[in-house]
Each structure stands twice: as C-alpha cells, then as structure tokens.
Length: 403
Image 1 (cartoon, helix red, strand yellow):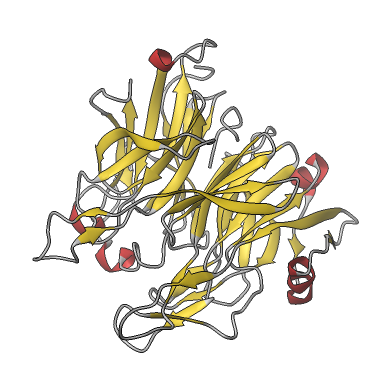
Image 2: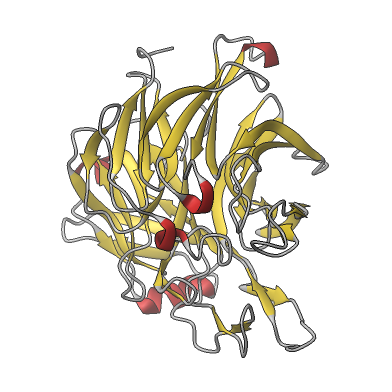
C-alpha cells in the first residue's frame, strides 16, 4: 500500500473492530474529486505500485474458500490476474471473505499478509471465540513472499496456487508455479504466525484472540507487520524466519460508555509506513468507532516505544509520509492520511487528508470515498490510487508529478 520510495491491507480489517462495517455503510458516492479506475474487484484491501507503473492489488476473494487473489491493474483500468487460489475463508463475525490483506513490493518480491480467514469460529456465547479445528487453509495469519519477473508482470494471464501447494508452503517448501505461457513464479512462506492466542474468560476457559495480519513494510532484513486482531506490531527476521512482538497497543477509555459499547476501545493497528527513523502506524480504534479517537502513532523500530504523532482522526486506516526535499528533515515532512469513514459508526464518506506537519490542521483532498482501505502514491503523476473495500480502485490527483 505504499509508494516505491516509501517502500514500497482480508477483506475485513479485524475480527472485532470492523465486524459491523457493512452494517453501517450506506449512501452514494460523489465523484467530484475521484476517478474510478476499475471496479468489480473482490474485497481489495492492499495496494502498491510497481516500478513498471502497474498497481498490484490484494483481494480477499468471494466467499469461496481459497479464492484470494493478487491482481495487476494498469492505471488505464485493465485488470489481469497475477496469482489466485491464495488462502481465504469466511470470517464468522462478518460472513465475508478474509484472505490476502497487505502488499509490499521490494525488487521483484511481493510480500503479502494473509488474514484470519476461518481459523476461528463463534464460541458458546456472545463475544466468545473458539478455534476452528478444520480451517480452510494452513496459511492463515501468515506472510508470503511471491517472486516474479518483470516479464511475468507484463504478460501473464495468471498463476494458480493449489491446496496441495498451500500445504507444501506450510511445511517449509518453496513452491514453483507455471502458467500456460511457460512462465514461472516462486512462493515462499516467510512466517506463519499462531492463528490465535489463549484469552480465557470466566464463562469460557477455551476463549481465544485471533491474529489478523493486516499491513506490512520491509526495512533492511526485517518485516514489520500490523496485527489488528492482537493490537500489535510484529517484527519478522527475514534471515531466520522468526518473529516477535515489537509493541502491543493498550486500549483506551470509551467516552460513550456505558451508553454505547464497553468501558474501553481497542487500538486496532492497520496501516504502517516509515519516516525519519520511526514506524508510522494508524490506530483505527474499535467499536463504537468514536470520531476523533483515531491517531497515527510513531513507533521506535528498535525499542517499540511509541507516542501519538497525529491526533483527532476518525477511523484512520493508512498513512503516507512525503518529504519535500532530500534532507528528510522532520520539518520538511508532510503526511497523507486515509480515513475509512468520517462520522459515527463507520458512516461514509471516507476521507483523504493532507497534513503539512504532524501538528497542522488537515486539508481535505477528497471526500468521495466509500470504505477506502489503502493507498499508494505515483510520484511521477502526483496521483494517489486508493483501494475501496466495495471493489473499486479510485484515483485522486494530489499535486503535479515528481513533487
């Protein structure tokens, strides 16, 4: 979901936080500031742009198990499949697909987060969650590395990952896929997080908290992965294939309690970026999705120490730091922030905001978005491409190119 300079989101963002997303979504879409590039995608959540100018989009797929997909979309709106058959499953709280979430491109390797899928099911009472003994895939809550050539990007009609190959990946094997044109790609399992951790309750000792990897970025020999289900950022050592929790974000008081919701609101980390030696993480905030509680947090990638950088947001889901010159000085940084919604209970529209500094008032760039999930900036044209959960890719002209 990144620009190549920065960097280079599971259709549903978290198990608990966005379970009611479509319940609250309503209303039409104004196109005053938005240009639709393509429609008909299946729950697009992550987006990035290759050095060839194509958009690479992660889609959870329809509700058919293991129908996740990565699409190649040109800026003129032509779509082709890069690879399908990726892990996906119906998440019980939403009855919608959860699968490929975030994408991050480095060189010719595309890192992809795989969400919670159907690795958990409803527990024996309200608000309780149990493990699913027969999940649709062994690769839920994981990160995959997909390696493909520029030729494949330019010409392929698509590769397909089979169920047997998913199990081979889970066993630590490198899988090679061939298409009908004689081209190949390889896929590796980078890390397979635990699908859930114990979260016992007085009325259900077997209760669990699911893992839902959402977005990610690569820095040196490490990946940093947001986990909206466990309110954390996880650090992955690419050389060793090991992972650890860098930071867990604590809940905050719910200002609407006891009238609406429980006493606290969970953090729900979503988008992640990097600027000035720090990770930038959007904290979406969970139910009841109170306007103004969301923030962009700044996190030290070494210590995990963190503090709010941009406050007063509503359902923030992605952030892009942009520097005005090569000095990369804090004073020269500005930020694009994507909001999933703008009113109580996830009500549209979604917004694209620009901040001249972390403490400045935001400038509204677009209020014509419905359930936006991630964005990427084309430095050459000054256009931001935004994935919408409802199946569209939208372009918003921010400024002239090469700014």
